[in-house]
Length: 144
Image (cartoon, rainbow, N blue to C red; front, side, top):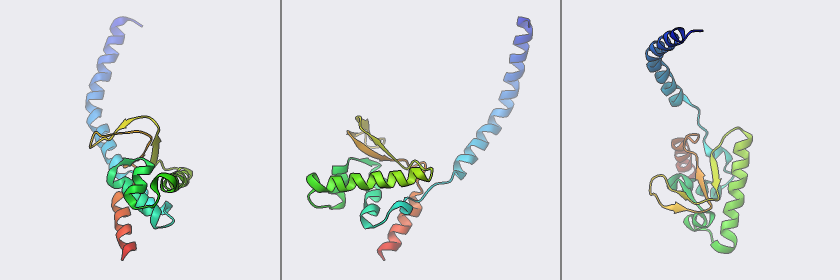
C-alpha cells in the first residue's frame, strides 16, 4: 500500500471521526447517567453498619479508628476499630459477590479528593456505584 493511499485513508477516518465523535460522546454521557447504582443499605444488617456507611458517605473516606470514634463506639483503640474493620470487610465481600465495587481499602497514603487531607490505611466509598440519595432516604425512614 502506498503512502498516498494510507494518508487518504487516515484523512477519511479523521473526517468520519469528527462527525461521529459528538454522537458517541452524547451516548456515553447518557449511559453514565443511566448507569445503575446500588443502595448500600442492602448490605447493612444493623444500625452500626448503617452508621459506618453513613460516615463514609459523609466523609468520603476514613480509617477504622476515625470511623469508630465518629459513630460513637466505645473503646475505640482496642475494640471499636476492629468492629468497624470486620464489618467493612463483610459489607465489601457481600457487595463484591453481587458484582458491586462500593468500598475500597487503600493501605498507602492517599489524599482526600475534597479536603486534600492525607489519610493512611483508609477505606474509601466509591460514589460512582452507590445510590447516596436512596441510602439517606432509607436511613431517615429507619430512624422514624
